[in-house]
Image (cartoon, rainbow, N blue to C red; front, side, top):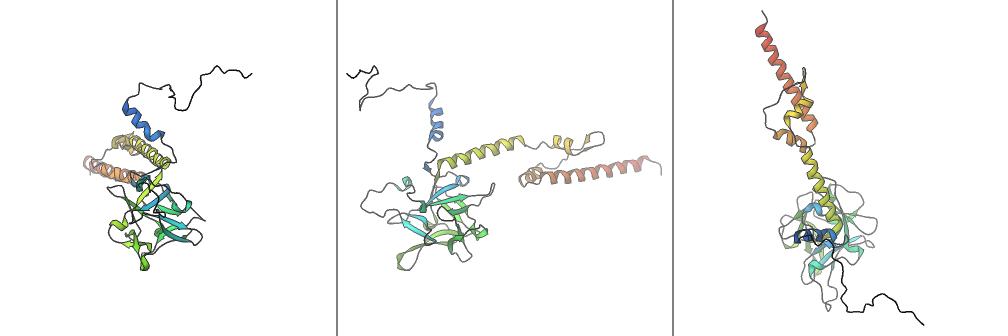
Amino acid sequence: MEKIRSSQLKFKGDKIKKKRKREHYDEGSASKRVGEDEDPETWVLPENATEIRGPTFIIHPSDPSPISVNFDSTRNKIILSPLDKDSTSDAPPLLDRIPTEVAQVWVTTRVAGSATINLRTGTGEGKFLSCDKHGIVSAFREARGPEEEWTPVLLPDGMVAFMNVYESYLSIDEVAGGSLQLRGDSEEVGFHERFWLKIQNKYKKEAHEEKKKREAGSELTVIDEASTNHMHQAWGAGRSVVSKEDKRELKRARKEGRLAEALLDRRAKLKRHVLIHSESISHLILPQ
């Protein structure tokens, strides 16, 4: 005879009571955790250009069907593929679309601190999206150079335009026969130059963490000219001379990565000024 279990039975449809944790949290704290608790693999829209990194899904809201920018590794060719291949099915909203095949995914990389990005194919050996001076767009180069650099421009409505090294924009162009292709010679941003981008949530969070670190670092490296002079520009029994010039020059030098050079120049100028001043005083005091 089978023994009766002492645990309570649960049936389909029964409401399961769960213990609430941290009930003292307010609504603001809960809303702050929404983004943190979201699945890292979830596809989301970037809120600024620095978040565009990692796997990237590029969509254009063409009519009658939106298209995705794909790469066919077999033919080594960029393909603009309609997302609604089956017109009888109920298509989800455009911004809810996610990639369903590897050919639809590009890998976005950037050099730290640079405004430009590189778009590499997610299939095959990894080729970079390129545009020459004639506006011809291709993806057959395995090395990156100036023609493989793109500057993403985030538009007010959340869409993105891509500017190449020749300051022209990536666009959708209709050629003979009604087929579509990418071009890179548009001088203005219109409907054909606007794309929706989706990235993975973990890379968006990564961008936020990097921003926090940069802001924390900048707070620690605020320039105090008096203390800086005392440390780097003191001579003669620790005597320091503080410049009356605007501090913007030192701030600009720090941003451009030449703070040490600027401090040395300042030291040389101030020391030369003090020596000239001392010689003038000696000339007045000493007998001729």
